[in-house]
Image (cartoon, rainbow, N blue to C red; front, side, top):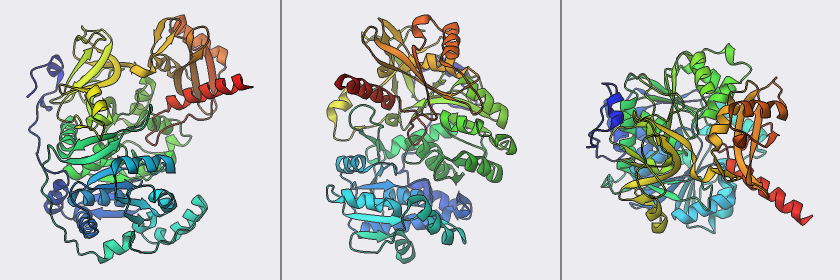
Length: 562
């Protein structure tokens, strides 16, 4: 149990500072809830509904089939799917069979896919039919032995299932015909033909891995984060306590992709463990999300700032009723105050900022949803989670001093897959060094200044992009903004802002420069502005600052070679 900390004084009575966590395999919760309320809806997908008993039945079939192919405890199964019933069934089916799941982004190109498959040593993969050519092209260069293929149409109700192949042909310019063979396996045949009998595997929740979750890889190759069953169960149980006002029978909107650890924990695992219905969308399309909220009336909506921004700036926003939304925790990137206030005004619900990393399953901090919160803060550590600020000399910082945030708790990863040196660099005596620079106030609320590696040093001054971005977001014409340090022969680096304007608004570089200099010290204000129609993002909506910096470096290289 964590000793009393300053932030515990602000915990509402309904949230405990410490929890007794279930030391059970993650997949055991699906079995328990299938027995507890078999007829309750577990998921909704584009008109298709499945109960907990149905999801469990099909997960058992997947587990048995994987074992029949030779899968043994600890083997890795890659799941390369968008949010769909198959994503849930294959994830839990693999865990039931004793496998370690390797969540794989369906947007990966062949080079990225080949690296992840080789690094993880995955011998099995579940993928969409339209992704089969990509998997086939890298297969000989990896350890893959078996590919299970499914299609979106497999879980669409009539007549959508008949129409989808025509949509697919138009969207992907291909019609995929998949035939069963020794190493290619058709999902429909598995579900229709399997008995559902599998051999239960003994799992040690605290030591056995449930997941290899690959980090974004903004520097070097992505790393496989080793998360145990206990890590994932503990983080979901923390999350459930944080959402103490949510009632049984609630619905969670699943826009965040499950191949991202945040969506996996706060939507999929949360729903399965606590009997919520998940409303699944295979990708983020603003109009589809608005329609789905109005029709399905979800109460919880975990998201990312770019998702909320996309909805708020949709031209048809006012046509939809979003009042069912009660609680939202925003993650993956800083939440601008303007976005928070606007979204709460539109929905009537509460939107707060949280914080975490892939290495922490992922959540470590959040603001209270129905109690004291501080705008601009990531909130306080979750139950049983300790945090501190470490200075460059290794000493703990005083209140208000900026240093690196370190965290400790039951959700902290076991380490990086096959990378003991990198594990040692980030994990020290149980403390995970996050690489995020921040500070703690006298009440125990934490604030992110910026990523350690994002800090811009211009003319000897330290500049944190997040501070500049917050100012840009306050300008009425700015929809999205990201700030980066780009090479400069005189200052070392200089501050550049990439800006997307709201539809129907105009702003000039001069106007934004005046606005920034009015609200920031002159050395922090961007020296260069670039207006774009959109910014590069990850699948979960995180803006790819590193990609923009790389583009700048390429321009410099090209200009020197001319």
